[in-house]
Image (cartoon, rainbow, N blue to C red):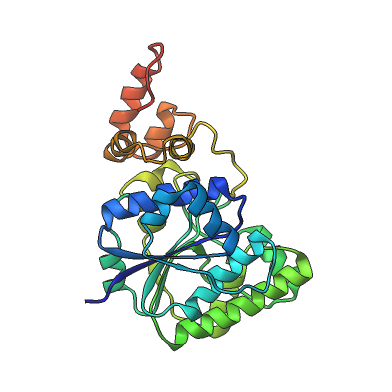
Length: 305
C-alpha cells in the first residue's frame, strides 16, 4: 500500500501567522488522515521559527526538507519550493496550501480517481459558483504575450500529483513561466502560470469536485459537503470575524485547535463567513438554519455557533 503523502510549504522566519495556519491545517489533517506521511518543504528561517515557537507543529511532521532556492524573498522562495516539489519529491502526493482546512477524509478518493494530476477548478469573486478565467488573468496573459486560452481555470492550492514524467514536465514548464512572470511583471502568483503550463503541454487534468477545495469565503454554498476548506488567506477580503480567523487566533494563543467549535460548525455546515444573515444560509441551501439564525439574531448576546 502506497503511503498517503502530504506536502506543505513554509518560508520566512517572520511567518508567524503562516505557521499558525499550518498548525491548524496540520492538526486537522492528522485527525481525518491519521496515517498520512507529512513532508514540509521550507527554508532555514522557517525551520528555526518552528523549532523556537511551534514545537508541537514540528512533532506532527514526518520529514522536513530544506532545498536550496534561487530566490531570496520568502514569498518568492515559497512559490519556488511549491513548484519544484513536483520534481524533487518522490512518490504520489497531495499538496496542501497552509490556508486549507481538512475536515473529512480525502486521500483515498483522490488516489483512486486521479489518473496523473488532479486539480479543482478555481472559484473566485468574479465566478463564485460557476467557474471561468478572471479578467485580471486574461490581462496578465495579454501583457506577457502568452497565447494562452484555458478551457478550465484550476486552483493551485490543493493538488494530487502522481509520480512520473508528466509531473516532471509540468513542474519544469510551470517554473519557467512563473520566473518569466516574476521577472517581467513582478507578479509572484503562480496560479496563472500553472494553468498556462497545462495548456501548453496539453495535459489531461482530472477535475476534482469542489468539495476537495471548498472556497466558503467566496460563497456559502461551498460549505455543503466540504472535505477540505480553502479560505485563501491572501485574498482581498478580510477574514476578520470569520470562523477561519477565530481558529487561527485560537491556535496562536493555545497552540491547539478548538475542536468543539470546529466540529459544531462542520455538523451544521456553517457558512463560515459573516455577516451571518439568514439569507446567507438560504444561499447555502440550509433553510432550517436560516430560520434558526433569524430567531437567534433577535435575541441578545447569543453565539453564532
